[in-house]
Length: 311
Image 1: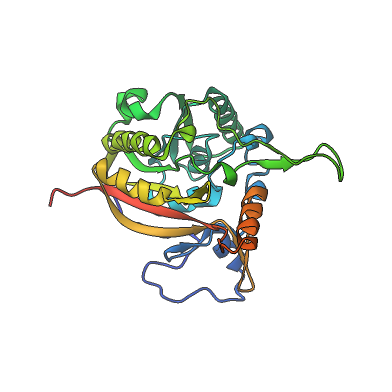
Image 2: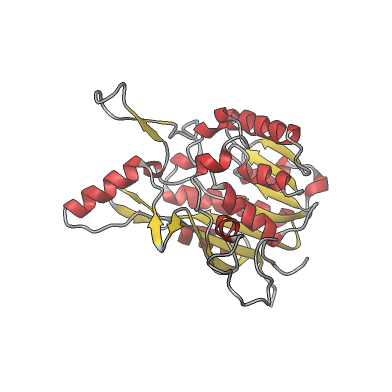
């Protein structure tokens, strides 16, 4: 397995020269990210990144991973032909981006609705001429190895996933008509009430530990697990999801080898362009008004893990 490397658009590992600020490839560099612990992956809104690349019906999922995050991780940690797995696949963002990069994307999803929409995205991507392969399985990833064929055991080069969290971070708002009616929230539910998204933080930690334990069994030598997560507030209390992920990885026999930041905001002329839900923004404004300064989370923590060494 080669050492992690930048995308084809980035400077080489030993090239310390930053991109010229007026260079012709600056937009591509900013869109894909370049070497550093901060990944500039939020330059474009998710809806623009998905337009034409994903089916419109699949965009109702409440917690989609930003495609540029999956894309940058796949470019950096795998080679063409490698197997990339997402055990909480949703509408298949990891699988689709793997297919476009000539990898074999494999996803598992608990909710039948999203399995169907992920399959539609895979079909759409294949028909569009993507060079890689993709497949989606329906099942509970806390029993992960039993869900996949034996031919994939020990063959996974990279796991990319994200735990469900933060109802205030998801969904869209609508009103019944112009300038009238109560604001209502749509597209904010993962699915059935027994989904991990609706468990207590402790139950989520136990379930995610079981999922990462299964990932450990499927990894090839030198393979990586990448989990993106961010803290969120529940009734005013900050819930440390990245810390939970790190602890779950340790309990699953994985070693944290790097922690990066993937921006979900844009950067323009040295200023942050926030991308946050209506309810996130409202909650922050309300807190500041009452004298409790809080801040919009505009990045994902990226926790990068490998199988822990015996030494």
